[in-house]
Every structure is written in structure tokens, then in C-alpha cells.
Image (tube, rainbow, N blue to C red; front, side, top):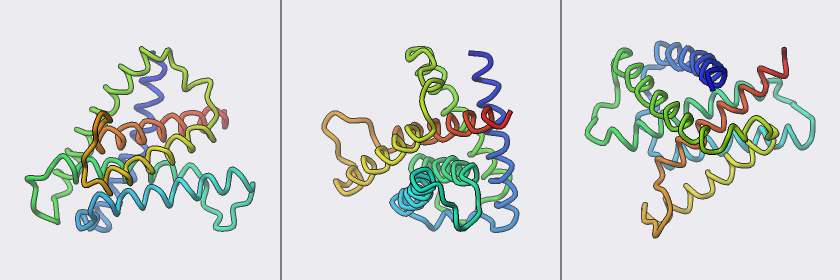
Length: 181
């Protein structure tokens, strides 16, 4: 489990660095997006990964690692948009944006540790393509919940699905990093 926490932290540090640099470049323009728009952004990234996995062709040239990093970061943005409803300003300071990022990736890591314990690190025996499919399935679930205006009968809410997608993307990045070694 210590190995997983270390690998998880290393992946998140890369994702956080990109988030932080993009915040310097663009500010928090993403705050204008509704959660449903962020869902669609994640869908686009996951669908591109799946297409590359299925066809073996990558015509744009950007690697799938970058797409998984984008999924992590879009999930954090969506969680912030959902959970920080009292935060009305579109433009957040870099410090606040980074603080919220850290808050929610820490929450995601705590969730991962609990689930990882109960599932016995089953993700280590999964294929990256299966993690991609799980992300796509969660996106379709979120779209259905959004179409139902957030109402569920017995299912987890939208934020829980974003946390799961974030963690699946981190697991995929850990696998891809280990394959390079």
C-alpha cells in the first residue's frame, strides 16, 4: 500500500504541476464551465484514448498519458464546481485554485486508499483499456444523472463518480509509468 501511495502522489504531482502552470497561463477560465460541460470534456479525452487503444493510430501525436492527466484535472475542476457552490467568483487567485486542487486530490487519495484496501489492489491486475472503459461508463452514468437533474434512487451522486474517474485515470497513469520502466 505504501508503494501505491507513493506512485499515486507522484502522478498527482505531475497533474498538479500542469494544473498550476495552466492556471498561471489562463487563470481560472474553466470556472465558466458547468459540470455538464466538464463531463463532456472528460468524455472527449476518454473517447480519444479508447480510439487510439482500439486502432493503434495516433494522428494528432499527443500521447494518451497527456489525456489521462487532462481527465484527472478536469475531474478536479468538476468536483470544485460541484462542491464549492458558495464560491461565486469566476476568477480565483492562483493560491486559492491550487489550495482547492490539493484539497480535492487529497480527498480522492483518501477514498482510493479505503477502496484499495477493500478491493485488494485489484486495479494492478487490470488493463489500461479496462480503466478507460470504466471512465467512459462513469461518464455515461454522470450524463444520465445530469439529465435527471441530479436525482438518483440508490446510486452515488455525481461527485462520487468524478472522484472514481479521477482515481481510475491515476491508476492508468501509474500503469503507463510502470510500463516505461
